[in-house]
Amino acid sequence: LLPETKIESAHILAQRIRVIIEGQIMEYEGVQVSITMTFGVTVNKDNEMIRDTIKRADKALYEGKKQGRNCVILG
Image (cartoon, rainbow, N blue to C red; front, side, top):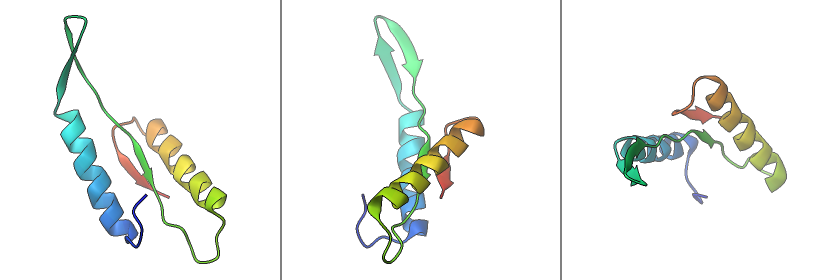
């Protein structure tokens, strides 16, 4: 959650986090693995119930997974 943040700024931050994670090589039981992340980013609209905001973010997340993962999708 990023209070008082515009969607463009939230997108930039999620993209930076995604790139940092993508660049890390982890080791698990002696095997090097890379990790990727998909983000669904949205904003809470005036007078909108939080559950509706979360549904839009979740929908954006699954859209990113459909598009091949490792991306940031705005909802």
